[in-house]
Length: 114
Length: 114
Picture 1 (cartoon, each protein chain N blue to C red):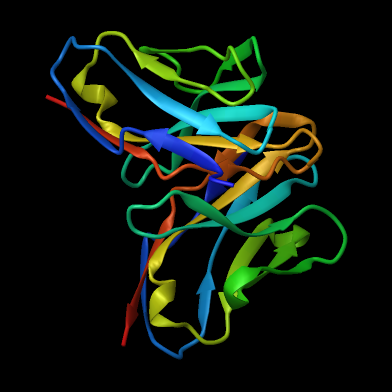
Picture 2 (picture 1 turned 180 degrees about the horizontal axis):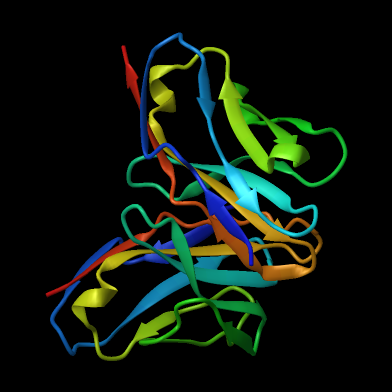
């Protein structure tokens, strides 16, 4: 199993550009999450999904959108990139059957907006 | 509201020395507690978790952690550190039945002197 995969690994955007960060998991997990990681701040939840067709906002959703058309894929969309969105983005998933919601993380996407 | 503090931003230890990383949480009931490790350029990997039962939890790579309800702590320990343990360590607290409520601490960066 590949687990959770993310593309791209690195990206530089200009202010106002848009892009989609891809996330795919092959573990048939129901729950999927997007986090951003800023230095010294830990991880902040952007959006999450409990299954195909169902998404909800996390702690820091402004400037982002998500969709979940399949169990496997959970892309994160940045519409108008701003310097404040410079961060490392992690996608994660967890299985429905695990009541502790242990999360499995992808390797991350490092995004710079200039 | 839930919160997690990791008082040590950075710790340096010599290879072979013992290690203790501190984690304190604020939560009104018995939480789920996690320690994750992040190697440079990688995603987060679960080291161990406390779900219920025995308050001393064993994890991967020789790590253990002890849940102390009276101190609201979940400190991570390892008796003898290896150079490969150099990484960022995150404590996290989750709430039963709330998959969107896992809160991550700011992290502790561990350096190991050969």
